Image 1 (tube, rainbow, N blue to C red):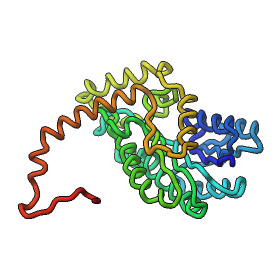
Image 2: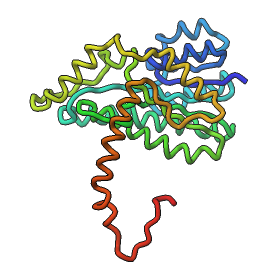
Image 3: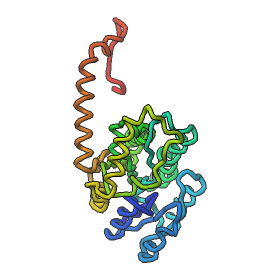
Image 4: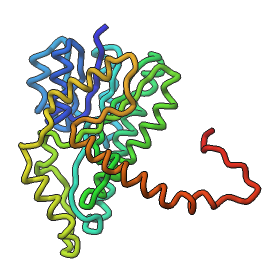
Length: 285
């Protein structure tokens, strides 16, 4: 049976590439975007398998309306893809409190609430798949991306725990962690700090130069990423984590090596913190 996808943020980038790949695969899709006119042509070209719908993931009424539209048109939702998000680049001290909260509203709370909106339906179906597109920045952060990566780290933890809650109900969860792909991540939509502080320039400026200097030259192909996501969804044993790109794997291995060494260096200090008569067991064991 063909699957029904609801994908957030389908106007550009991974969302658009995945929507097109899903339709080519013969599945159905609810194309959502804050400006649905940007995806209207794709819906019109696939009238039997696609509808376009306005969705700002921070808006509770629009979240519920998008889910209801999917049910009314296709009768079910098999795959929710939480793709909509916003980037940011700059020292954390330079962002305003309002900017910080906005970043979490879009990248974190919007994902959690969108997931909560589809879970009752998936529970009734006893099936479903939730795909959260985070970033390699959800596993390895760096200066200049502290705000952005903190939202992605949050979704990693959310999805990991959610997997344990919903797996017995027949629902799968996959986290997609891309490296550098030729999307619009380095575009004008990236949030810039309200205040630029000179003391942070030696850390932030090289990252900014790399990000914008390589825009359009990133190694990752969004179309191939979309096919990998579909392969994960179609798998009988889908992964919790789907890392995309050799650069992502390289950064992750680099972090793991440094992390492992630091854990070993401080292990004795860390474990010698229990009461003398305590019986120690793994957390959750």
